Each structure stands twice: as structure tokens, then as C-alpha cells.
Length: 416
Image (cartoon, rainbow, N blue to C red; front, side, top):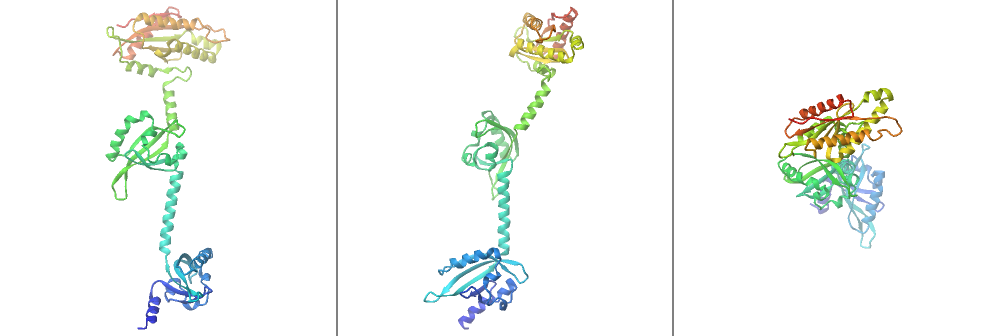
């Protein structure tokens, strides 16, 4: 078989298109496979410039390819070529310029193959990568990958959330960015992660400015492409507002809004949690019940606004008298309970009670108002192991005795 005929048969029956363009860029010859790929009868392409079949947006790419292979090297370009049905097909074209022995261009020879599926795959992958990039850059959570505590990768959202550049974390021990108090719980969390658990925690993390943020984290094992565990993956989000809201709810549950004193439950908890006591007597602390004398009458004469102001002032004087050695709680409309750990005898309880009574009676409660306010105080001692309700009832009984004596008085009841 003639060699030229052999190559012509190969070219015409190959799945790829082979072609020859004249020096002006028009089709001079093409393989029959062009019809199967682009639908055009070869006769309708011969004599027409290749650029006529290229999408307008890709003609610059074609021109760049022609220019680049002008020195005889091969060029590879990707362009959309017009199909007979009016649509476009992605083609990858490899071509080079052919010259005679004097360097005169005879034309361009090349091959083209359809790459629609490849382009679709690449575009899908690019969209996926762009999606993940956008997620990584814009998600409010910070995602961290670490191995043996060392940060391997951290999402760009770190900068927005904590002010650090990712490069300032990568390669460092993640524990260096945590508050010192977080250390004790980290080992247990790591053991749970190794056991396959998803560990949820709330921790304090240092910002680039040096102060700490509360964050909520979820961490679990990270598995590589081969399915082998390779460190951990941690998702972190700011929790400052949640912590502040919880602390405010806790404060509201424990603190009286009007006076700023604790509520009754806190006084009870304090008595229940007392573990230290005098080794001989078993006395743990002093318990005082204080009542503002005739507050109801004051409300009737001066109004509740004045009455509220009196309660705030009395509460402040009681706290100043107790200072940091005890708990002051408002337990009723005009009643307060004082638990003082440093009081271990009835004499000490009597001295404190008298000090608080005089602090209210001897000092104007409301500046600019002619309001005389006194308090009655009942005092007792709380024994270690005694139910709080029992010792408080005894102090309340002593208060009743002080009220029955005309008020502005102190009465004591010794514990059994």
C-alpha cells in the first residue's frame, strides 16, 4: 500500500480531526471525522477561515495559538467550535506552522479532539473549589486541623473571628492560644476524640490583641483519603454573647434587682455548702434576720418610690457593715438575711447585729428627705450539719422578739 494512502486512511478514520490550513488560515483539507464531531460536511468547511467556526469569545485564544507556533513549535489551544446544529463544542487543538526550505509558511497542520466532558468536569471541580473557598473564607466558624496539638491548617475566617493570620497559627501548638485555666480538661477531651466521640466544649481563646474570647468548639478525628485517622478537625465559633446572656440570667436568678443583694436561695446554698466549723462547739457561722421597721407605713406616707430608695440604702449599709466576710440576701419585702462565716460565738453575733442596727439608725438613710429609718435584728448561730431552714427559723424567731420589743432592737437565740 502506498505510504501516502496509508496515512490518509488513518487520518480519515481516526476519531480525532486532522486538518491542514492554508497560509491565510482557511481550511484546505480535513479528515472525514470532522463531520462526526462537528456535524459539518467537509465540503462546507473547505475554503473557509478556521476563525469563522470559533466562538467569538475564543478568537483571541486562537490568534495567540497561531502566533505562538509561528516558529515551528507546537501550540495547544482550547476553543469552542461551532457545530452544524448551532451549538458549540469544546475542542483541544494541537497545531504547528509548516515552512519550506526557504522559511516561507506553507500552512498549518494539526489535530483536534472533542473535550466537552473534560471541560465540564474541570468546571464542576472549579465550582466546587470556589464553593469551598467561599465557605472557608466567609463561614462564621473557624475550622482547624491539628495533629498532636500542632496546627496543620486553619480557615481564613480566623482573621475575622480572632484577628490572627492563619500563618500565625500554622505550625504552632494550639494550646498556646488557650487560657491557662483550660489546660486540665484538654487531656480528657483528647482521649474521648481518640475513642471516636465528637467532643463539644466551651473554652477561652486568646485574640491577636491579647484578650480572651469565649468560644464553643466541636472536635473529632480527621480521616485522610486512605481512611486512616490523622489528627483532629475542630470547628470553633464565638460564644461571648451566649456566655454573657447566661451569666446575666444566672445573675438575675441569684440577685435581687432592687437592692443588688442576693436572693434567699443563695443564702440557703451558702449554709448548705459550709464545711468549716469551730472544732469544739461545731459552730459554722452566724445567721442574722433583719427587718426594716414600719416600711409599710413609710410607703403609705411617702410613696413606694421613697420606700424602694430606703430599701436600697439599708441594703447598702448592711453590705458595708458585713464587707466581704458574709452573704447578704433579701428574703422578703422588707427583710434581709446575713450569713457571716467569721462569727463563731453568740457574743460576736450580738456585736455584729448591734453594729448593723446602729449603722442604719445613726445615719440619714436618704439625703434631702426627713425620713427616720430603723431596723430590728434577730441573731443566732448555725451549727455544721444543721439544716439551713432550722437555723434561719431560729434567727426569724429572734427577730420576732426584737419587733415585739418595739423595734430598733437586737435579740439573740442560742442554738441548742
